[in-house]
Image 1 (spheres, rainbow, N blue to C red):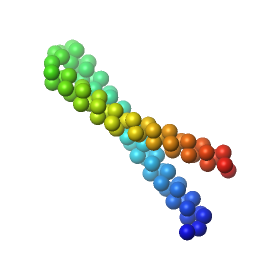
Image 2: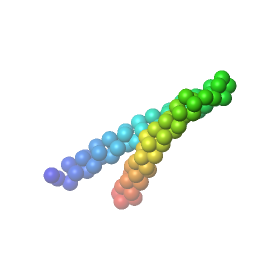
Image 3: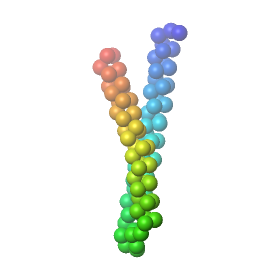
Image 4: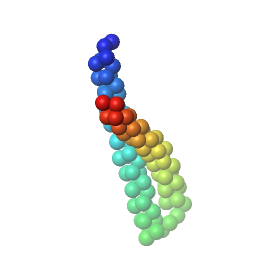
Length: 87
């Protein structure tokens, strides 16, 4: 492999990681927004065990999706910034 092949491969992997991070962030924030809507509905209508369980599941699921996505996003940004500084 030549140096340009390595650079192209690295660029493709970085773009894939960025796409995964952005998609994960959108899904994670959407789950948190959905939990906010369900919480508001639960307060206005009736806050029962089903609402509480749904909120718990959504908050846990949102955290599982969002936390790694945010870390991956910052890792991609850091790699891009480091590459700019080297060039």
